[in-house]
Length: 282
Length: 283
Image 1: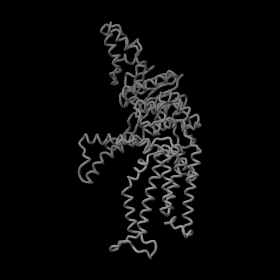
Image 2: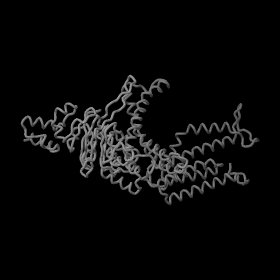
Image 3: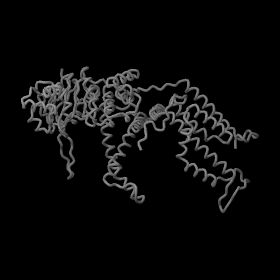
Image 4: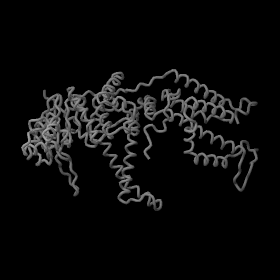
């Protein structure tokens, strides 16, 4: 049960991607995620695949670890794809269904749409897991804090937000340990978590949740005392030990990625205007 | 020079009774004491005697209901200088897990100096200096929850040291540790004391008291005795009254002494006592 949450699914390494600035990685991942929704044809999906494989290759994370993240959403993937097959209509009113029964009609267009949605979701997950596999949660927290800084103008409590994230990360291991301990303690006193119906099982978790909650408050108070003792006074005049500096890797990666997706956006914007080359659009 | 001084300090908690009424529960009452700069003071007493309340009064986590607490010339009730005062008092608590703010050791140690607004290059310098003082530099990049209790507590001490305090208060910091971890923490505390740090050690392990320069004994919120470890341990009646027990070595030396052996627990410093007893016995 006690997996090392601090490092999440981080895959230790020293590759080009690992050494990039977390902020750039985060921004480029967001760009990637938005970008794949502008991909229209299987041909362009091919380009994206090559791009993604190249990134994974450079990051030196085994393909197996990357694909593992897809396993978690298989049900969602299949469900979405199947629904798309049934609900999509033909691309043109003239298109005849491939197969129909009662009110259910399946069009070739529906199959295409389903396949594209499927690919998009898979690439979305793979793209984000490349980020989390090559970046520690701590770095991500710093990146988020740094990227949200402009929001201070509208009084968004950026520092507090980042502190909450960082405290959450550092308390997950001890809370898991405590949950484990409470479960064992309740089992030792005859609690039964494994039999009975849904409601009975749900009820069985009350004796775990209550001590956990009470313990959580106690911890919070102790932590607050410890933080006060260490001169914590909120964000004012606070400095930060970690410096984030952009290096040549960040510029190269940003240039390549932005250029790639700029191409995709251009293709999307010009759809329909290049009558002949339909393979780029469907 | 006097670094900590308490003048007739009282503090009480609200007590919520079972019948719904709110009463008062004494934390500490009428405590007057002073600690010299560079001293190594132990504060002992059984559970609930007010030791931890006293600790929290020292850096203004709790403010006295009456009386004054002064550390390094600053009063805890003065809101304007509280920050300054906390810079001078490093505090380490009982549960190491509940005082870690970051999931990387060096970032946790950096929390204090970051709060002070220390410039970045100096933070790094302070962090590594503090880590080397507690002998934990090699763990700078690891995550605290993988370390042993003693190691975590040393990180917590480093976190306090990075603020560069004049006083280090260890509030039962050894209570949750195994003997090895306890030794690690105490060794660090004594090393820091030798370098001039004033240390206040709150504990209920009487063995830890042996090496201190003076001992304060608390009972039911009152300061009932203070003196050198030898004086305190010689006072059997007092120890019985407050429910404490002299360390085994002292008890043994006493028994040997009354049986006619040549060991005197009172005149010997605690450290040599053990060897002394052995020597006498093997004669």
